[in-house]
Length: 534
Image (cartoon, helix red, strand yellow):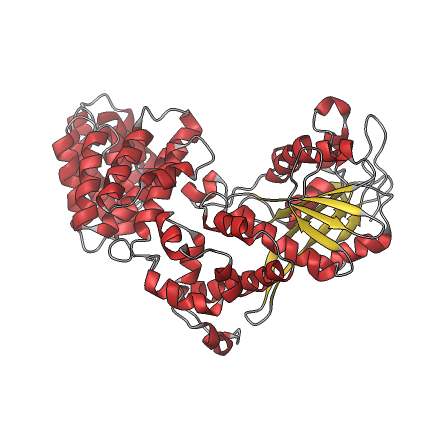
């Protein structure tokens, strides 16, 4: 009888848990086994015979090195009745030199699932004695809690306990945890805990397994290479930036490679380590942002408020997007006037483009990475009616854009989105504005054809939808592109108003380096059909 058959016989037998677990002892060494039945036996018997359950888990891990998703329920069952035993085996696995810390740490949230008070004590100890274990344990715990929360919806306070522990550790390092808490827009203790973990990772003296530690002396030294950017941050910008905790600008400015050395890395055939690639990406980003900030001086913009918003952890991403968009429009419309935050209809849209024949009111927005991408490390952008694109467009249209259009019906309105990994990309924006590709089998044809369907945006022109995006004339999206020596933005432009002059559309395409990605679609309301055009 093969091992799988043995396991199945043990699983369905009426023998005691002790006998079942004893019979599994030799099965795991006999070759390929059915993990499902093996772990189901441990799951069913773990609470009754925890010692034997942990021994069989130890056999399985040692011989098979199973992923945690194969073991999570069995680990929880074995760990539940005896906290000391759970702690003993978890420490045993962490001490095994042949097991990677990243691998074994994925067991931690399950072994301590029913002993979260003990987990919090262990985290405190690991932070002082084993920073890498602490870092991986928190990451794996956040991932596990997020998956459970998505499936079951209730963590029974485990997320709040974890957050409380991380707050205590942060305060012991003279970090203000409230900065991390305030910068989370969603009501999520998991995201707040993730922010505090990143604050701790940015301490150069402790958690630095990813090379994330921020050396503020290096930040100050690199700042001289970006004079226009630094000039708008204010006199005490270093102290203000450091007080914010984790901040992308500090991370970018801490690059070790000098800016003047970037040219020797321009050859694409080089094999670069992660730290070098991160440094080059930082220089790429900062070089373009510094270039964009130059136009703020030339136009005497309110740099003090923009500097404050760049330093502000919550406003930073939106402010960068606004500065990049301002530069793009000013570079193209040199014959016009691009004004920041001029009032209209009791509102203050981000930009006003004043031309001889047209006035365009522009709202700029940036979407944060999705919760799943942050906590579960997966690309999770959804399409269709649930897309982040639709959420952002309808949110902005119902607010400022509708008010502006009602006040100035002859003016044009425009929304600019910045692409964000896991949330918004070119495909999702085009699906919303132009329609996604679908397979259609036409009459008389043998093979289906790939055609573009109706835009998701059609649903938002119907009066009963409550979104009413007919007040929106133009939609654009972009991302940072170009090589190390010549960064620039690249995007798409969509026109929802067929009355807009073609030359204006061409110039908007030039502003966002859209090339041939300038599209016109006439969106109508009610039951009327879409008039396709491009």
